[in-house]
Amino acid sequence: MNDKGNWFKWEGRKAKSNKEALVDPYVSRVVEKYESRSAVGIKKYGTTLERKDLSTLDWLIHAQEEAMDMSLYLQVLIDREKELKK
Image (cartoon, rainbow, N blue to C red; front, side, top):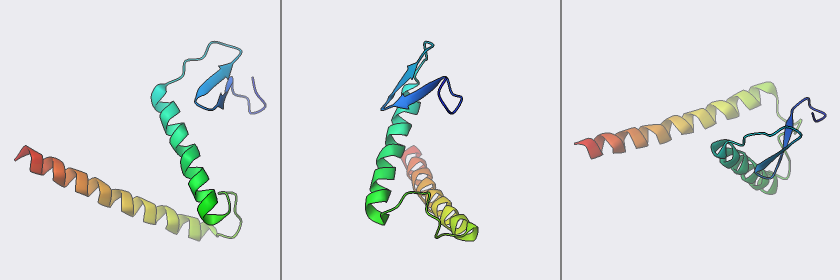
């Protein structure tokens, strides 16, 4: 067990464990994307998400804006799928 109480820790895309651990390839791919996105954000903004210059309201507004963008992307895909079915 590691210092966070987990039975395994991520090292790259593979779990290292004292027990035999299954590694879900979908989870591995998402973790890899998070790591990549984090690196892009650090390069772009020069900080991690541990920044202290944003208020709770600022974080909520950022999250809402991201959710709004996602809803637009979903609408594009829904419309495309509907068009394909015609």
